[in-house]
Image 1 (cartoon, rainbow, N blue to C red):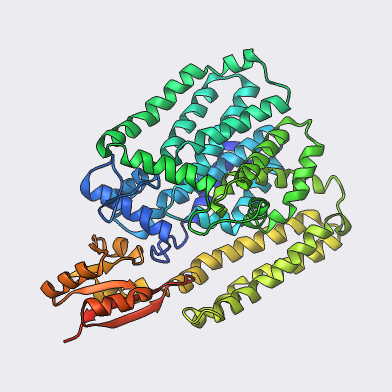
Image 2 (image 1 turned 135 degrees about the vertical axis):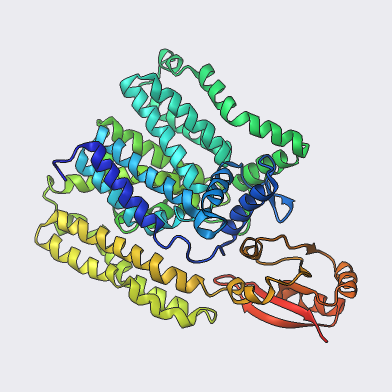
Length: 525
């Protein structure tokens, strides 16, 4: 590997990353709520040819801007409408994120840290999980990472190409998830310039902000304006007020949490090597004279602190920090050998890791056993055995002072676990769900409706719209004129459905890892 040039090494890394991310990408079926809504929204764009107004089940969807829909439509045209197609470009952007993180670290730190950065990301279960979902986050993570890296490279090299690429990333980020893609990086970049004592008005002028804003507007403004006109401002109001301001100021959908939760999310999200998260931040602070470390530290702390104040907290919110905390962890790990690190110097992080490593298989087994819906799949705990085995090997190597093997034992054992998780455990467990269990029963039924609420995954997996009935009286009228009607609903509305018509449940199953129970009804004969 040492004899290869950097482009060849980068190509090998990208190919390896993409191969791992594409593994079993079509399994399980599209089932998770966010995946189902995004994948279906893109499918409806493909069918209607309307790329201006996003729709889900025929209703305007104000949750997200359209860029990830566009990529999904492109994949649908290449491969057909499927779970694989919906997730394909998420995997591509995941591999690209690993690639640019490697190249950035190689350029401004060292090659060993660059490879370790890739190891941190590839071994992270949550990073891999996020980059395999039909959601906008893989695209946002890539464009935010790209904007930060182009900003710093321009600061160092003063080449305008990096400046224009930064503004392009901002514009594409705005089309991916809205103002957060510009406002948060912009704030963090400003703080970094102040902390690093680089801030001068001449430097600000060198960023050619008017030209940059023009690039932003040329990329993002046309779609936002066309959408505003087409929806008479309905989408604009819903997106900016509800899904931006309200998500930050209020707890939505029960996703709240205490102030330090985002920090914990980052540490857990980058397991296994995320156990060195805190230590790596202090190490970066100690070596802040190396400006690239200070820059990465500003990004990580900026993202964590920003979302600590948010009233809605989700693990994917802090995921844009992953490439930069991975670089900090990698730099710390690359310095371990020079520091002649012994077990005593990493004991707290490693003890924490040992507890986690031996807890994971047990937690999987007992967690699945506790859920009647999936307890038959509790045997998948065996796919997590590489984690404690890797921890034992890591203890052996660190006790002998073999630092590189210590790191590889932790990282590679998790990569193997990720492989088994996506190849076996995840498809088996999530394959047990009410949508999969009832799809063959209802997919060809012409008179199919839902009452008040249903699992959104039905729509994408049947590739058809399902009319909604929201009142008991409306359901009663519908049933009188449609004796062959099939009604999808939830257990909580059973009494209302029984009053509306003499209906019997023909299918009932609790949603996987969720409280609601899906019930399907038909009229008694």
